[in-house]
Length: 552
Image (cartoon, rainbow, N blue to C red; front, side, top):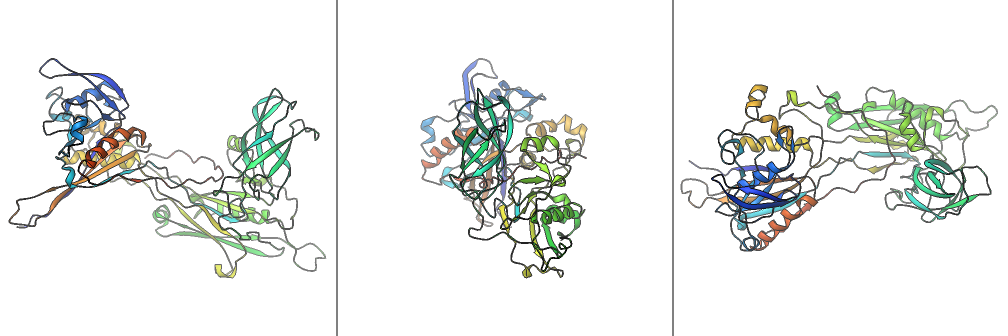
């Protein structure tokens, strides 16, 4: 009968901190010296595998569980490798300390405190060696109309070029200051300054504004309000993040009185499908009101008010409102948030809510815009009912706004811009995923994670849960190798594949392990390490924090 190849994934925790001079004792009595580890990797040579457990035991314990775990490379004799042995292209074991901290069989060997060992790894049969960064998720941020991303020119940093002296009043608390003049065409920038001994210092940007260019200068009024005391603030534009997403595009759409404008928002992704069994969409309407008496033709209106009508209509929709946050950038470049936004957040951003907006009327050549942030709150299950099959959401929401006619046709309108500042991306290294990897790996070792609380307590299953912070992000290194079957005359000749996953708290903590593994593989002239890093982050405006996740 044919015997087909198998594939296994084995997970090792290397979440321990750097530690030095840990005494290592022999179970039969006597001392074996001391051991050290760098970032979860044991660096001391010629020690037995149970030294990993003793290093872990010397680290801080949390909830009775060894929070710090360690790995190392070991020879056929089960002794940690020397620097020379790493260059000799010899088969090695990858070994990790035990997750469990109690065992009645032996203080060092066997049972639950047995170290976690890989198959013997022949470096000539290593096919891949790669790392995956710990990456936070990125929300889909979409802009409609004229904003700092579509028009360009939002300000993310700068400095006072000539600070001067004698300004007042002195204040260690950041003071919100409006710009009054600019050397360019930008508008809407507001910033925070502090003043110490009469010298102003910029401490943060409140409103990014729009339309600024590199090395534009603006003059700001002293907090005393005296026009004769001015400071010059040099604007530094962060490019390409705040450059126009579509350079050269005119994103300024003129809205006329007496008209109704429709904005359709499509919400796509797993969260919407689980909520409705289909993708969500809603069409918001904005009526611009009657034209002024005596007007010969429809006249332009303040586009900020159109954006407010659209935003309110969308937020009132129970179909799409759970999946986004929204802000408005008015015709002058000032950011406005939704009514009900937390007051502390508004104060920190130097902003207000759009229900307090008072229209100054339309300015020729100026336009407003919407800023959508794809966001939602997902339910997660706590440890009390934990099952490895419990769902947890990883896919970000994707938003697709478009202006449409009464029939829902977006092709009738080309005057309004819709651009993506950030494309939604999934997180990498989620603690939820790492925990499930450990549970699967321990199951291969016959250490099953029981859903029965009593059995879980007996088998120390809770220590598996405590070993990982499910809210954290972890850096991972993978080594894939095969174990050939050289004698299989009655069936298919093939190789069993093993993927070894090593979990670290950060890229820095994995450095020593990856350096030693690379030296070992280079000795055989095999694969180089690959790296899957994070996507670049966006410099979008701040949005209020979402509520804490629920637990059932």
